[in-house]
Image (cartoon, rainbow, N blue to C red):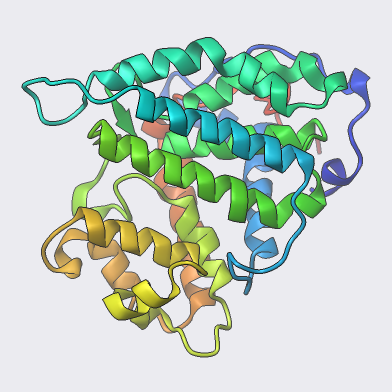
Length: 315
């Protein structure tokens, strides 16, 4: 799993292509589960999960030039939100100004990705840019969900595969880049009143995100004082959210939703009864596979190219 992170691949290894959908019917899900893309994607998620174990957002880690460029890119998306205020419209949800914002990204994505890639890898930009465009929500439905979040993780995974991000960038990938991505997505969701895509309401983990709960629970493994039962206490959340992604997510839910936590976020409330963070983490990984990666309505939108390939895993 980790070998392609440490040494940049040989230029002849890839025939870059514009990724496309391959899962069009429920029976195709077997192709996805057997694919190189699935193995690479889940391997990437779990490698990062291991990397952040027991570490605070505020700990010391290396910040590479590529990470700086990614933060600048996300800063650009953030600035475009400020430049594209919501429009007056009769319906409360799904503000149409989002489509204006999205059209800008659609137009600029390739240039934004080219600026992040090392010069000898600019040929990968058209392929990798597709995942960036897929990661910010759907411009027709003006919604956002875990499939869009997965596209951003896929985007980061592709940057690792072409050698733009390295093994030593692990912590910065989550604590800097993914954290900034979350901030921009929350701003999009709030500004344009985006609908949750395929939300299960109170029965889902969260309306919009999943990965920060996995990685965030890993950060809390073996914490000397904080236990899962504490995250439902507002005092704890306010005190520790700068250090832990999981608590940052809970803080956002508390800001956005009213009423008893057990009612609006039933799944999370149940998780607070789990005795240890490592059990929470294992349970969330299982739930992510079942609720996101094995669900046809999510995976039918996933796109496959040369970096995340639909080809079966080589034995």
